[in-house]
Picture (cartoon, rainbow, N blue to C red):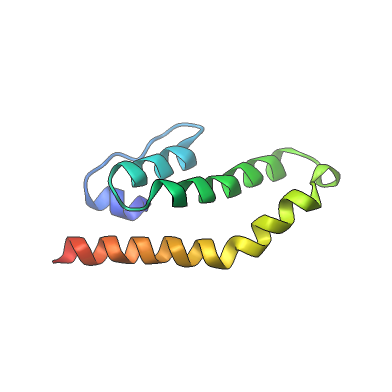
Length: 90
């Protein structure tokens, strides 16, 4: 997404929340659907929590759905990005 934004001369946010901002920009510029961004956002939350918390605080019940959904969300994200790249190449 970052490379697509740079290709379109869209500035990359330089903020503490740049990962989330990047997702929002991807939605704003129709790279990915809002629903996909929301799904990916759950992983950003987990990443933030994991890097700033102790491992024993991790709730397995919340982690398991994230782990199980990775292949589907990745496929969805990849398809949307590939569709966008195909569209701009036409």
